[in-house]
Image (cartoon, rainbow over all chains, first blue to last red; front, side, top):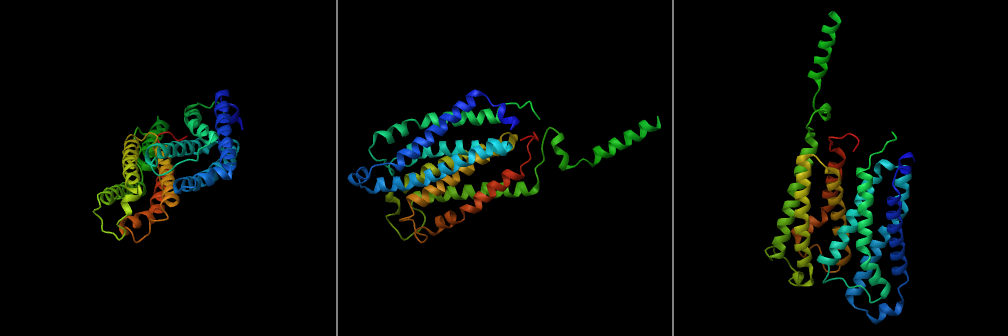
Length: 140
Length: 163
């Protein structure tokens, strides 16, 4: 608990951004209107939604587990944050460079805005990782 | 005088007995033989996996499904193999300089698990075990690679004990 109190305000700000993004993504993908999927019922969109569902399950688990790591197992919080950052970067690189010809997101304003905010999530997670790794703790 | 002699003897005995277990006190860290063995396995596995990726891409491995490479899987294999090669290089560099090894291990671990999930979700429909037996063997044994990475991350000895 003592270690958590030493984290900077910017850490909590970036953590809030990350949580806001993840909750927005969960809300967006869970409330996609049925007609949007039916109109564009291509195999690419179906496979993308399948992949997005698996990823959202992991995101929901991480959202639940992160405060536990931060407040109860602070020593391991940096490893958990680095793993989440690596995963966020990996799926971003995958979507942009590797799977660009295979996956296709449904045409929706909310989805495209969520996709465009992904670099902000990555930047926030990167800052959280850097602060947890390099910030010296004064309380033993 | 006698006490000083005894203390010197004690100190020299302690220093003489300091083996690999106390190697954190030195400028370099001697890793255990288990670490070296698992690390060699990781390198060997990743190199064979990459070679196999490129062989599949070049259609050099015999298989049953001829449409296998026309499903977009070829470009995915290519990009994944290059990314894996880059991460493996970073892993070896961090192991050599003994700096940030655990973090690079975590990054590689996250990448491997993510690619396994992607493959399972996107290509499970047409990637049967009999399509490319050698490649399937590596896909099936991927958990072994993940376990090895996790193990090597745990038993790695850092310079800084606080890590």
